[in-house]
Length: 273
Ligand SMILES: [Zn+2]
Image: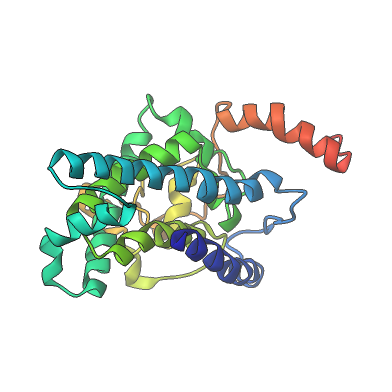
């Protein structure tokens, strides 16, 4: 519940700021519309991703953790028991919980880097293509994730962190923080980071990842240093501002749009487009 509150309070606070920033300092000509009618699919993903994919991921991660705790001979009566079991045995307990948060964010992003890179392999890309299908790349498109892509990614990233045993509040805020950070990294905003672009991810860095013309670069979600370490860093200052986003092939999202979104829009708005 705490994680959902953080997500939606954060969305409520960040969305107006980013919408304003996109008008004041647009990354390219033609600021994407955020009207519900024009972007109903992306707005719907802001319900589906946290409420369905997020909660189901959390339940599966805690269930897998609980199975391990029981296998190790301890009793589990509540989800908190799982977090407490691993916290009591954690090497992280030697450092303050705020430091644990930084360590966990770095580890989360390292795991996320490799998960993301793997999901760009041909076997997994059809699901991840839903996220890349947005041709209007902005903060509103950040939550557009196929549920299976999102759930598998969450488990791959969060289960090792659960076993590492950070303080429970640290574990609970990691997901919302990373999700809310994607609002910033996807924003269609001109936000020069200077030398900081070699350490943290900004909108220009992530736009290069989504650009149709430059595939296979900039996989990190929060810390661009992982792309530097693993040789996939593309300096956003070294390329022209990308203008074309999306994927070439039809995606699951295209199918969803054709069979669900367009008919629903016709019923609600009488839209014949
Ligand atoms: Zn990607």
